[in-house]
Amino acid sequence: QQSLICSHCLYSSRDLGRALCIVTGASKGYGRSLALQIAHLLLPRSVLLLVARSADMLQALQVDLVPIVEQAGLLVRCVPTDLGLKAGIDTTVRVAKESAAADTDHVLLINNAASLGDVSRFAISFCDPAEVDAYLSLNVSSALSLTAGVLQAFPQRPGLRRTVVNISSLCALEPFPSWVLYCAGKAARNMMFRVLAKEEPDVRVLNYSPGPMDTDMQAQAQSCSADPALKQSFSIMHSQGKLLSCHESGAKLIRLLLEDEFPSGVHLDYYDL
View 1 (cartoon, one colour):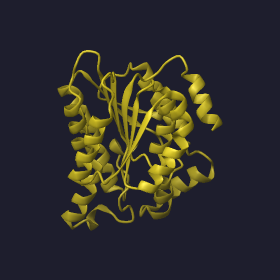
View 2 (cartoon, rainbow, N blue to C red):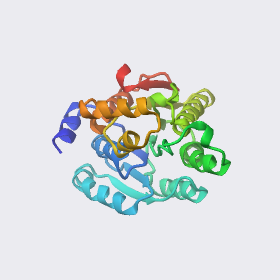
View 3 (tube, rainbow, N blue to C red):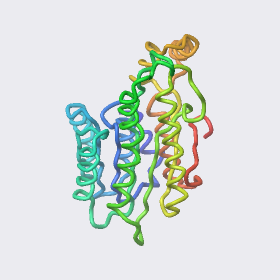
């Protein structure tokens, strides 16, 4: 709680506007932390739309947001759905359109939902295209389709800012042995959003790499990675306390969004800032 208050004080003179803010993968880890931080920076009648597969975990987050929401005059909507399916995309876009205030001046979409994939095997073991397609459906296709749906639902008009954030990774730029699915997915997402920035110059697009964080995904990486050197490096980072908290990383992303000075389409890493 104290860290959230500090974040609020840090940015008390600035805000993200009367916004429709959509956070995917909001039920835990980084997405959950971002939702709690962003809620402090939205003007009254803003909408915080939280999307994830777990209805129970979304409801728990909604309960934690109650004190912030009541004070700030926000609307929180939870969408428990699978973004790997078209129905999940359609539902999210529909709820966004239904919920947004008529005087919304900022549409902010944070594409955070992702999975690590099977890191217990190397690339030559992935002989079944259906397995690969299933991974890419959630981690690549859904991000593009949701972004397209939201931008179509809220087209360019005077007085409306539109911002799209892709939660990226160092894996989008560097190959990690035994992480072929994750690296391929993150690289594809980076390029997707770079193309979007070129095609839609009025949309602010950011690829943000949050750094190694102390999350469930990081625990999975430590226990399951097939590459022994990679597995050891993550374990050492954990034992030496070098993993970032979600709040630390989120604070830098929020600073970027508030300052709004990044070149659209750029890839920025926590450690570059």
